[in-house]
Each structure stands twice: as structure tokens, then as C-alpha cells.
Image (cartoon, rainbow, N blue to C red; front, top):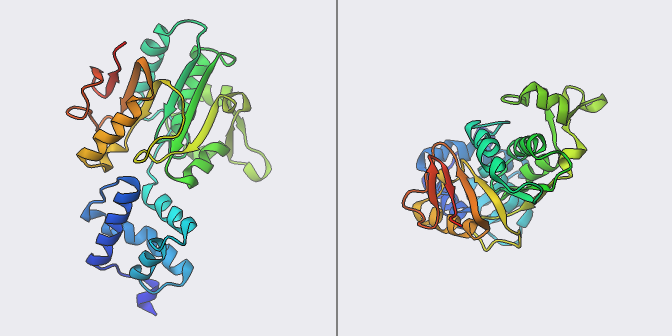
Length: 273
């Protein structure tokens, strides 16, 4: 019984999950992530009363359990995020991109790995402040995980998640939670009406999304191998307006991955007009 309470994963079983998550999401799960995978998926073994990771692998790879396969993807692709993460990007958005955008014309942004929504709403706060709450701007948030998208779309966060969020934005664009939501805050409706949410697998043909003036793809390519990065970047660049910007995380670079974009400054690239 102790073995069931604390399931162990063999090297061969871990290798099966490595191949599966790479095939589905393009994520190269390093050997060092074996303990992390066992911890996250071990809960599902206990919930489903399965004795081994091999049994769970057969379940999710059978083609008959789409919901459980999505649950597995959700558990293995969820990453930490917070409001105004890598703040210099939002300064550049305000002082360079928006400042040079034609006045009165629509402005569309895509947060392509939006996780639980902090990036989407950070962008929205900046655009509400710089373009105006009633201007024609929109922010599309997408992720492969339906669980994080549900959190993002709901727009309810606990006050301990305000790391990086200036108090003036909290006062202007958020509502204090009451009753069952006490201790939390809700993104205001006038912000949320500028947002939309979609499940998108960046490793597949993209759905009809429209064109964007800015694409944020931050802190996700570190999980891709070089060829997957090239393919993902090529797909996303097709969604940029000429002159549009492509922004990656501070630990990431597009060097050697594309010759379509020009480097403006580290982590910020532009599609020539």
C-alpha cells in the first residue's frame, strides 16, 4: 500500500511521457524533471486508483480519454506568472510602440502563452491608460492549458497575487471581492470587454486569429528544442502586421531562429514594414 501512496516512476515510463508531451505540445522535458512529473501526475494516479505510471500512460495515450489527456497537459505546462513580470517590456509598449501608433486606429495584442492571465491584464491596464478605456484595442490570450485559460477568463485573483501590480491599477481597474470572494479582486468589466481567450496549441496549424501589432511569447520557448522554436516563431510571425513587434522572455532569444524579424533591443523584435 505504501508503494501506491507514493508511486515511483521508472526511467522507461518517464521516457514515454517525455515523448508524449513533446508530440502534443513540443515541450522537451529534461531528464531532471522526472521528480516534478512524478509529483504532478502522481495525484492523478491516486485520484483514478491506478497502481502505476505505466497504467496512467496507457490511459492517456489510448485515444479514448481526451479529457484526462488535457488534464495531463494542464499539469505539465502550468508555469508561474505575475502582474508586470519583466516590467521593461511594458515600458517599451507604452513609450515606444503605443506612442508611435497612429492615433485613433485599432490596436491588437496577442499574449500567446497567457497562462493564468496576469500578462493579458497587465497589457490591458497599460493600453487602458495610454489609449483610453473606450479606444479600439483588444488583447487575445491563448494557452494550450484549458485550466489556466479558465482562470484567466474568470479574472479573479487573490490579494496575495498582486506582486508587481501598482496600487493605482488595482484601484482603477479592479473590484474588491466580497462574500465568497473576500480577500480577492476581480478584473473590472470595462477591462475584460477588451479581452478574448482561446485554447491554441502553438505546435499545430493556428486557428483564424487575425493580425496583431504586438505578440508576446514569453518564457515558453525555453521548453522547446531549436527546430520546434523555429516552427513556432514562423507560425506566429505570420500573424503580425508589417511593423509589428514580437516580444520574448528575458532568458530567451530569436538569434538563429528567424531572419524575418529584426532585433530592436534584447528580447524585442520587429517585422519590417
